[in-house]
Image (cartoon, rainbow, N blue to C red; front, side, top):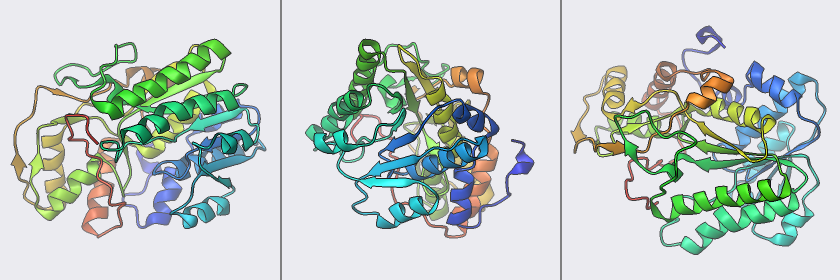
Length: 348
């Protein structure tokens, strides 16, 4: 899509969700290649609702009649469940750690796995490992005849030299901290079942998805707007528009294979935190203060393979920053959940 296809500013949450769930032409083609229904496990998170809506819209645009099913506890978000159903997504409420509940889920040939635990992992390590490694084994056994796109994270790589090109999919992982280690465990479980059971699988190593209410750019814009200092220790990052990350998930689901396809999903640029903060300062007319200095390494992924396969993201950095600066300056709502991208010891 060209830049003219996007608005100069995003007015409200309804418009935001519409943009986040807008399928690209390639997403419509990808989901048109798939046969049968699709289930999104862990749909109640930050990204799940609009990804499920994108799958619904892409299927409709492709002329494919299928059920899109979203599974979550929905314990604290009944409004989210109603919102999904209003947009044509069936919902099922339950605990995915309950083996009997997982066994009761309907047979579907296409699975997107988004469940997992990050924040709160430190101090609650047993649940973190259960969510991130035990649960995938339940899912693989239940959906052993399906194709699966499973979310992971660039945290499995660990920090790499900031002056380099970022981690690529063939690099040996060096996870730092129990969260990242458990995520590597999740990947190994999906890979094991893919190789031994012939399950077509794609593993999405995501960092970091961005929208108006959440993400690295929102964290920085909020601090600049409030006059708070910017910590430069984690001096570089990658980001991607959440809608582009959702579209990449649908592409990867269609391309899932045995052994699994591993794919870095992020923006193509290595971004300087110092430069990003300074740009937000200019966009919002605010002075910017910094603390510390950039370390020689950072958590960085190289998205060249995804760009080679699917092309560059539809929404670029300049437009994301423009949207977020206006959103934050206007007092737009946020999720109140910092990314903690600046954490360097792996403790979330």
